[in-house]
Image 1 (cartoon, rainbow, N blue to C red):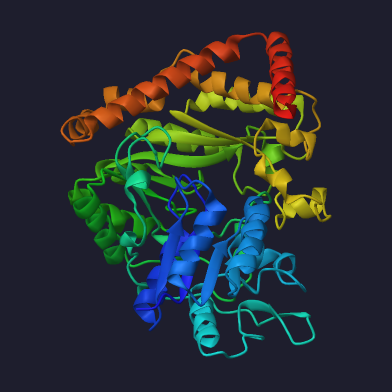
Image 2 (cartoon, rainbow, N blue to C red):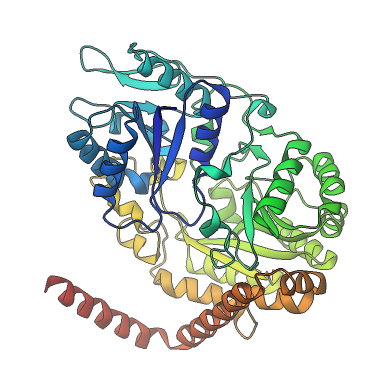
Amino acid sequence: MKTNIVFISFPKFVPPFSFLNLASYINEKTNYKASILDLRGIGNVEEYIVDYLKQEKPDLVGFSCFTCDYPEVMKFSKAIKENYDCPIVVGNVHASLFPEDFIFEDSPVDFAVIGEGEITLAELIDKVSNGESCVGLSGLAALDSSKKMVVGEKRPLIEDLSLLPKIDYKLISMECYFSPSNRSGRGINSRSAIVFASRGCPSVCEFCAANTVWKCNTGTVVRFRPIEDVMEEVLRLKEEYKIQTIFFGDDSFIIKKDRVLEFCKQIKDMDVFWAIQGKVDQIDEELSKALRKAGCLMVSFGVESGSDDILKRIKKGTNVEQIKKAFAICKKCGLMTLADIMCNHPGETERDIEMTIDLLKQIKPDELSQSVMTPYPGTPIYKKHVNQKPENYNLFCNIGPDMAKYFKLCKHNRPLQRVMDEYWRSVHSHRLPGSVTLWLKNFQYFKKIVFSGYFLNIFLTTIGDFFVWARYEFVSSIPWGIRFFLRHWKHKIEHTIGKK
């Protein structure tokens, strides 16, 4: 059967879920065929893409674009148009919020899908295959005959997620994503997969573009898959791919307590471990006990800061007391915890940093995930503190402490790397990494890993965690003045070598 659309997936640590969903929908619900070109592990990418397209001869080529992907998407789109002339469609966050970045005269991109993509894309493929005009199609941006961008009406969200087909994991090689060394989640080294039991997020955090993207459609934002469908997917992953741990990637897994309790009843006898994300104001002791008994190992919470002023400023919808209570409940019930923390908050002061350090010492999370507040286009933070089109989207490819060179939101002048070191030491100093302590604390988990057939891979990954922890423990203990001097000369040498 002829391939009608090829989705080109840039290398990531997680599977290209948007493409897996879209391609599964096209193949199952329409008379057309979709395939995915996964570029992970591919060298000479541009030549490889062109050769693949000349072989497959698709009617349409698709890209997914976050802001950090924009330079690459435009570069490869241009190369495709020069060597294999066919329409190109782009979707996901950046295309949804800024279709004008793709749809303009002489652009290599022809269409931008806005918002949820399954139905829009199916209709687009049908029109392209039949040589019909796509201008004005709901949920799509395209140029009209006068070379002006036309954006179709907002398309309703898919209300009933049971109508979506099963994900076809055979569309790409999943082995590298399921491998223990890939680690779908921090602190749990096992053969793991990511599953989504719902779509949408009700929160309005100012640093996140998710709620803005969901508003590109009409209808109820948060929708749930039938629990039976989720169980079927978990069982399939366990039996066909020998998955040991499921990481549920839902923005807030525990938003509906009754649903979670029923979920726990159904997954309890499936002999898999799992982990979730949640908000601190949604967890209670009954829920925590049910999660633990059903095989849940860890709950990740978006802590963000130890300052109530900061939490209000970013509209997190939680406070420090709720954070303390949530972590205390999880610890009491035997659930591991992960704290997501950010620095470079708008107006963040030295006092806010010290309050965050104090909070981390009190709640004692098993794992810590850190990031630098970045004002991505489309977020309320961006509109308030930047509010102008960046000249170079490459700036958003750097998500580390050097981001402050371009987007400094905090008031203090403490180096962000130093702040992150202090946060790390407040959690991990003189404590083993979570992946090691999990082996020591949970005998059932240890037993399952030992007799899994993947013990060596998991063991080596865990040993690697230990050495990374030891290295960070050593480096972060070096006085900052000395570290700053060494970093300065390291960058200077790298710059000199780069010139040569």
